[in-house]
Image 1 (cartoon, rainbow, N blue to C red):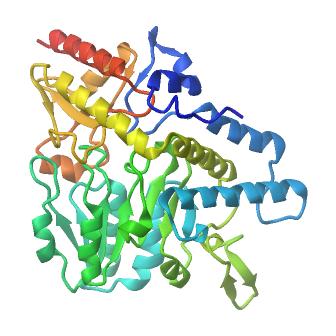
Image 2 (image 1 turned 90 degrees about the vertical axis):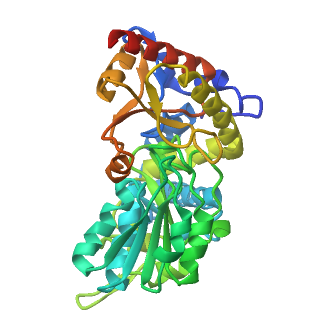
Image 3 (image 1 turned 45 degrees about the vertical axis):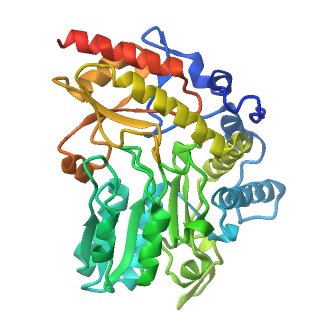
Length: 416
């Protein structure tokens, strides 16, 4: 298995890039510059090796046999849950439910908690900057349960209007959902403050940490949240795996989201009793290889130190904002400073469609995102439909920023 990063690598993206096989390739004859990390990150060799090792050495189903391969797979899969618990400082690894992604994690809460606890007239509050994953499930419950869905607005600079919280959170508020960090604007929200307001009226809190978990340390006990959703593929892990942290008392009381194998304790023709946590919510054969790969990704990030990841990105963000501000007719959305902000930069060039920008950048070997970023209410609130988006991670450097700036200047000239 590939070695984990050491302290001398932690702040050197040029060295870290050697851990990622994909950077050996070229795109259109140019070295790959990957700036689409808010959509998904690349995988280090250590993660790839962990998945290969599972399939080559101990491929078997978990929790269903006493033979050696099944035992080894079960231990590794359970161990990945324990790593995820450590990553977010959960009280117990049994509070970690593996899902396909953060989207499924939030849907689990909506179906397993919301359907059984929300009543007509109850209120759910979310922010206008939510990813669709933390909006559409509550719209579904609005139709099914006749609840009221309310929104916390943002300023034109992309910060939440926290002064509006006291009037929006009422005794009818039963759940408050919030994105930890915006995948469009990079804004890191004051979730602890919002959670405290929700707790004042006894509301359940759901944090979408898909964008935050890869970049900033997370402590669910310090936050005091009831649920927190994470996607593995945004933090160096495989696609198709993520996890939900849930407060144990709530998970114990909730109904399962899916029904079938492994989530049961006993079944008769007349009744069923459910398995212990977390298997109660992990029906059927899980993504075993994905879970083990996610555990390897967590090992890699913890070896780097998530606080070091954030510090590196802060320096890169400051450099990128300064360089991009020198391009004529380029508008950057969101906070203009680096305070409580991730290295995610959404922008538009006047008179040029974001898809055209992304297409020309691709010809230079630079991968960025263009579109509405699954956050259409926020886009409309800020008066736009689409943007280009550059998002940075541990293997990006100031050289990548310089290449992006040069390519955008070429785009400007082409559309002058």
